[in-house]
Image 1 (tube, rainbow, N blue to C red):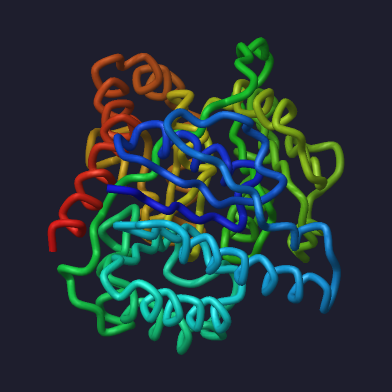
Image 2 (tube, rainbow, N blue to C red):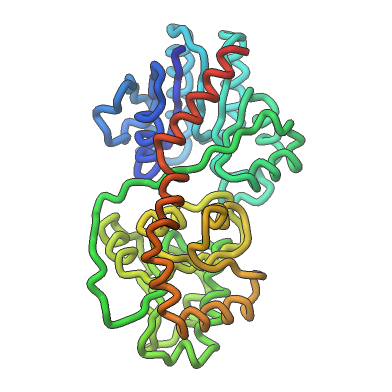
Length: 364
């Protein structure tokens, strides 16, 4: 069985995901990826770098991607493949035509797509029509949480049997830092500052609750690039630290290490890399009851799930946490709890589930 694994966006954390998954899949693999993919060697995988659109602008970016997809078709024609696995679609309208072309070239090959999100972030319903066609064309869809499976089944009229739920594993931290900050109890909100992440709700509660805003023993760290109106409401000389720029991996690792509780009051999400970043370091979290944010809670209580995504619900939880720091320490140091979480997100288990999916497709 030979697998062709394709990721046009294989750089930064997406390349880390590919490496962790591929090294735990026991099969012959070709890895078609970006020229910016940083790894020279991935165990048992032949690396073929063809995507260069990231370095281009405007129409040249599109033309570069089209050229790369033509190269991809030439690779496919030369190989005897069992499964072709697409991680991301950069231009879905074009990519659907590529999928149709692949089936004409190799009608027996099975096509898998990992839907990391139901639709691209912040795209609204722009891509809904094309993804309906893609989801119903491919042979198998991998999602990371049950709620994504339900949404795709309901919104895109897909059969349940077409969709497999396989968790997204922890991404490796390039920097292991210790928490050397004993001066504050730190809440953190990190990542690109988009409206769907609910930062405005968090700031509304924090800035309008004197018992929180005037508490000199705690602080809120907001770290990430983005231009949201709510950032203008942050008062000076209070316990809010705003670092409104794109952070390096080392800078983020330092913030994560100094975090006591992470806050993710998202309005909409399928799976969150930010969530996985925090729980990989065994840091308790406050999350909204949406998408995949509650998935780790199925293994145990690693923090708090908001009853509703409303200011009063978030205020109640924040005050409870601030008034009961021992409760946070109890979660942090529960070895049995975190061993269950770590096992669930272990790449070996994830790789075995993915390989089993390939084998089943190859037999059918």
